[in-house]
Length: 75
Image (tube, rainbow, N blue to C red; front, top):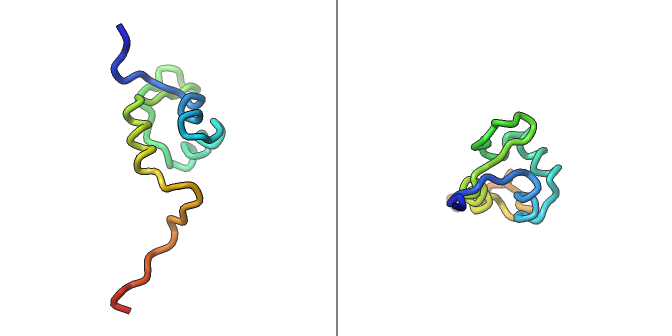
């Protein structure tokens, strides 16, 4: 019986996101990834597919400047 929400690690997440696994590790070190859903093996964290997909949906696009604010229309 297949799991409905399988756990995935850095490699599969990186393939889906189009980035390198090391980038995801860096994101985690900076607190930019959600907490892993499974830490049963300490050096191999895993996330539910749904957790990863929610993170991807809320992730800024490539090269997005999240430090800029739109101009205040009130001037």
